[in-house]
Length: 303
Image 1 (tube, helix red, strand yellow):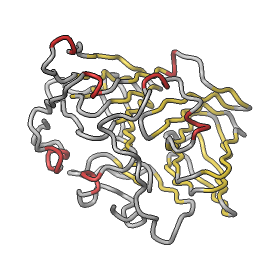
Image 2 (image 1 turned 90 degrees about the vertical axis):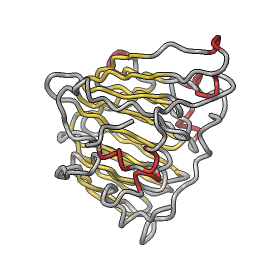
Image 3 (image 1 turned 120 degrees about the vertical axis):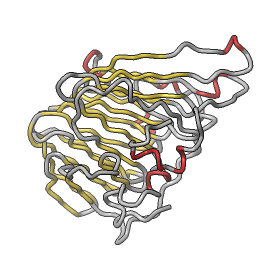
C-alpha cells in the first residue's frame, strides 16, 4: 500500500494489503466530490468576502477569498471549529466567549463553542472548518445531492475529549520544520484533524501510494499548484455495479472528498510548488497513535 520509506507505512491501518473491499451494492461506497473553486461561482458573497461551501459526511469546508476587514461570526456555535490561514498575507482578530486573540498569518486556530467573531486583515484565502452539526452552514453547500442520507461506512461524529484547561482560542503557527519520519504537519481538536503538507514539486509517478480508509472520508484541499486525484472503486459481485476509475485534474483552490473504501492517491503535478491540506472529522486514531505526529497533542487528549 505504501512505499517502505513512506511514514504512513507504520500505521496500524496500513496492514490491509491491496485495499480491496467487498460490498453488496455500489451505493455502499458513496460518491466523490470535486469542487473547483477557481472555476465556479461562490455560494455566498458578503462584504469583503466570497465563500464556497463543500461538505463531507461530518464536515463542511468554508473556503473564502477575503479582502481586508472581512468578518465571520458564529452565534451559539455547537462545537469547536477551525480557522486555517494557509498563506502569509492574511491575519485575523479572533474573539470568542469574552476572549480576544490576534492570530498570525500562516496558522491554524481552534475556536471554542459558543459565540465567536473573526475579523480578517489582508487579502487572500481564509478557510473555516465547521462540522455538519451546524444546519445553517450545511444549508449553504453546493454538493448536498451527494449526501441524501448518512453514509453507511462513516460513523456518526463523536467529539474527542475536552482540551486540557478547557475550551479557549488556541492558535498554532504552520511554520514548523520538517522532520524525518513525520507525515506532514498534523493538528487536531475535538472535531477535526488537519494535516498541512509542506510545499513540494511534482511527484514521482513511480512512487504513488494508493490506499483506502475503511470507515472515514478524506477531504483534500489544494491551496497551491495542481493535483491529479486518482480514485478506484472496488468491485462488487454484480458487474453491473462496477464503476470506472476517476482521474481528475484539480487546480488550486479546490477540494476533493474521497469516500471510505475507495482506493485513492493524489499526485502533486505543478512543476513549481504544490500545497495540499488533508482534513478529517473526527480526528484519525491511527495518526494519533504515531508518536510525535500530532503537533498539539499536549493540548488535546487522545480519545
